[in-house]
Image 1 (cartoon, rainbow, N blue to C red):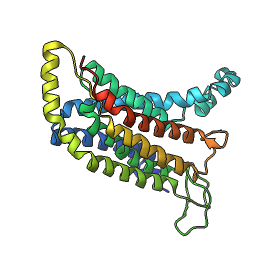
Image 2 (image 1 turned 180 degrees about the horizontal axis):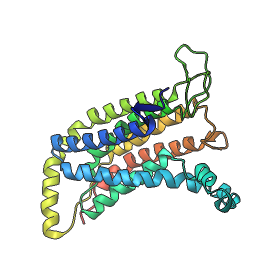
Image 3 (image 1 turned 90 degrees about the vertical axis):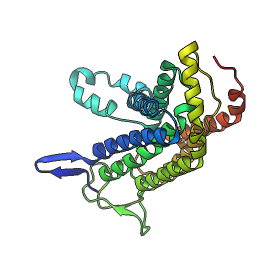
Image 4 (image 1 turned 135 degrees about the horizontal axis):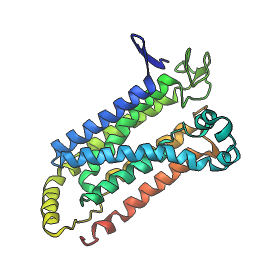
Length: 284
């Protein structure tokens, strides 16, 4: 709809601008959530940044891994047309790769600073759908991740899109997913508010203990993460049926993202089932 924001002679891509805005908004939420809920705001903010770095790496790495066979067949482009090779294989970013990389980054932070994941979970995890919700509006502005053609009154027609076909009424999958992500954010924030507030005494005791013994306790919480994986996996699985872009790739009857959504849902359910056993594990 509006791929660029013009400021004087500058053309700022709305996709990049809203993506950055989402990241900053998520960081601000994580910090404020930690501060208001009794968690350590610095841990919440820095673990989020570790997650952001991991998300960038994962979002870039996953499409490369999925395209290895095609990349091997096009290795000649490295010497004949490097720009074409980069545009075809190195410019893509996949959210599920970013999610896996981001969670890995958060866990690395928790391990490095010897804090349980549950001490930042209720601040960092809701920040993910919040940031993602804003970024999806950037997708709408750019026209990427567009939907199938439709005759419905709520369809949208792009006129100067750099991604979606122009002049055709399409399902606004980007806005639908953005709204769904924001609802997930509200649910996680409201439903797990009490759990976040209970972290204060736990975190303070844990910090004191690890300064003395160098050890940290384990928590089998993972509730917020579980519900996020289940809810977003279900949302994305449904959205994929409405998508019209062919860049996603398919494995059998389902798209790659739908298979990954099923893995996310299954992982969330398994985490819920083993949560009690994790909470009973001894500290150390």
